[in-house]
Length: 336
Ligand SMILES: NC(=O)c1ccc[n+]([C@@H]2O[C@H](COP(=O)([O-])OP(=O)(O)OC[C@H]3O[C@@H](n4cnc5c(N)ncnc54)[C@H](OP(=O)(O)O)[C@@H]3O)[C@@H](O)[C@H]2O)c1
Image (tube, rainbow, N blue to C red; front, side, top):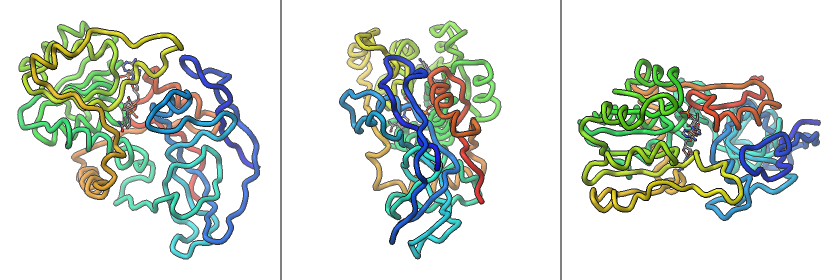
């Protein structure tokens, strides 16, 4: 028998002790053309909060009393697929359980180029791709421009800021603690960082962006972003990657704030939402560039790892209270 994490109740606000339940289920065994994989790491991601609700979105809601699923790294421990032998490390969007029987097309064999396998859920996985495409296709930072990133110490933001720096732009991060400010400036090479929980945002942003803002990489929405709009430069670009501040609004609560239209008209700025999956035909190019940056230490990445299956809910909720620096993962087991 093994553990599986299920959605027990749709949360109203931040998930609580009623949201998830852990069930004991059979491990199962692989048929022809199937693999049995052992979960090593699970990724908790803000978008999963949307799947816990039944509101219309770009991805189907999780079903009640069924497994939560998400990014996983796993080891093949039994194989009935000749091209994927036992011992292979794979990743995929898999149910949150300790072992999974999968078809070969549900997983991808990892090539890490020397990076740890966990990076396939962070800098060299979905968050890295998201930072890459949001910046490359929409942000388009140029040398000397100012790129502000919210949620800047997280999985996506920390990579987006470093990619902006590599393009010769000034990266300015917005984060929720002094520890994260220090991390961005001292370890990631951001030009400046602001603590939105402590600093006077208006003053701090003016000081950090004396020439205005050319690109705003939007991860959080809400009050933090309301301070950005007056500083936008003509023809600024705003890749809207996420709006985590609104993900736990309770039923009936509205995400309100200063309206953005007049700022967009005055500056002719372009604000565009995007999903990393829109760029599936370009993943290989992005993977190879990101891998090269990581290999040459031009991009550094950090992970916050909680140990043990039972800590998945804690890891998930920590995303909304800023517990993580870099990518938040849960370690489930060691490779054999
Ligand atoms: N478009 C896409 O394809 C795509 C793909 C992946 C992720 N995303 C989005 O990208 C954003 C970042 O995702 P991630 O995986 O990199 O998460 P993350 O940044 O690693 O973790 C979330 C961080 O958000 C910050 N935060 C939480 N609540 C906040 C609030 N009310 N106001 C301001 N900051 C808040 C916290 O840091 P602080 O301590 O700094 O508050 C927290 O550590 C999310 O909005 C996510 O939905 C979009």
